Length: 151
Ligand SMILES: [Zn+2]
Picture 1 (cartoon, rainbow, N blue to C red):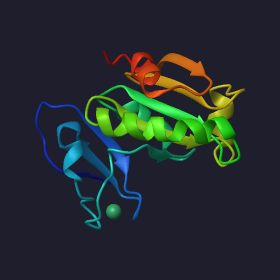
Picture 2: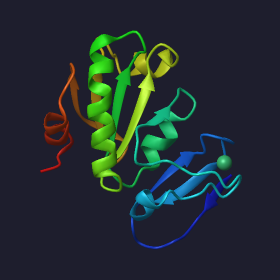
Picture 3: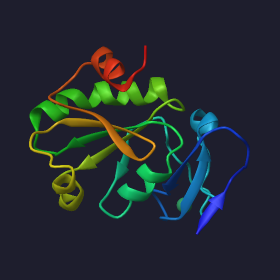
């Protein structure tokens, strides 16, 4: 089930609530307003990297109305930790323009293998459900913005 929060022409993303798991369609124009889950009323946080999983990855990427930037990482990875604040800053600055997500490659090996992730961190940019760019290695905010196509 998907809770329709609004219908108009602006792009939206379809996301599982991080608290109850219900799928919600959220207008990206409302990304900074902490939109609430239609099921449980808890906030949908779009201004920080959104955790994806093997179960949710495909639908979120396929239905996103804006480009999606995914940080493939693991908890033990030093360069991933170095890049985490840069990704956080990117997500906060570009909420609504780009949907920023992350995938723990240890816990979600099906997706990591599907995208042939060899080194982490790896950033992959998706648009219209397809992979459009990929880069491995820690990046600073300015490099992430360039990679994501933000000028
Ligand atoms: Zn919920």
